[in-house]
Amino acid sequence: MTSVLDRSAPSAASPTPPKRRRRVAVVAGPWTYAALIAVLAGSAFPVYWSLVVSSQTPAAVDRVPPVLVPGGHLFANIARVFDTTDFALALMNSLVVAGTITVSVVFFSTLAGFAFAKLRFRGRSALMLLVVATQAVPTELGVIPLYMMMSDFGWAGEIHAVIVPGLVTAFGVFFMRQYFERAVPDELLEAGRMDGCSSLRLYWHVVLPAARPAAAVLGLFTFMQAWNDFFWPLVVLVPENPTVQTALSTLASGYTTDYTLVLTAATIGTVPVLLVFLLFGRQIVGGIMQGALKG
Image (cartoon, rainbow, N blue to C red; front, top):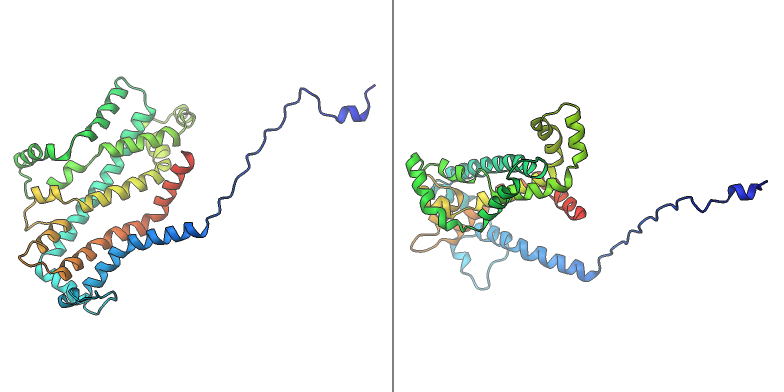
């Protein structure tokens, strides 16, 4: 007979419980905070300096030592910007261009990224390699044939010529494909197919909700790139139909540059980008942190 002590003792064949990983807390020191404050100050100072100059008179810009405190001429300078050039049309054009391109890039990039990451079809690897290879082609090489194409379409000078070439990007497709490889498990898609879902329904009900953090990051980058694009709008648009960047170029192209006027317009043009980040900042930071934790 075995004793009670022998029965309660664990057998040698019983599996040992897995050891839990100990999380090491990383404590930031004073030098870390000092470096972060220095980087923050260096990043925010150009925006602050633009605000200071845009609130001063043109004579105050040339003072030595320079003025470092905002003045009281901000609204007067804003009125001068809208009186000097059609800046309202420039803001509207840039909002239409950046908003349309952002929505299109996020939609097509998530759709193509899902196809390249989770669907099996002939030539998938070769097509993905071709998409990535297009990033190695300099943009300047395609300006002349692209302008000729826009002229043949009758879009030269119109806002369509700025929107259509940027409706999808190779970077967006590659970015979303890499994200879907890790964020969407194959078992979840197989379960959806067993329930009778088609590929489009899987994309709409499973893939898009999982892609929200990465789509927010891609959307911010795309909006900033489309908003700050200068070269192609300068080539294809006319001065009477400007974007924000070409309007800034017009303000700075006089015989003498009125820096108060130029920096006031630059400050106005910075506001939409800041608003986009404030509206979607939580999802953007969450997407970056999620990618860092998974990596």
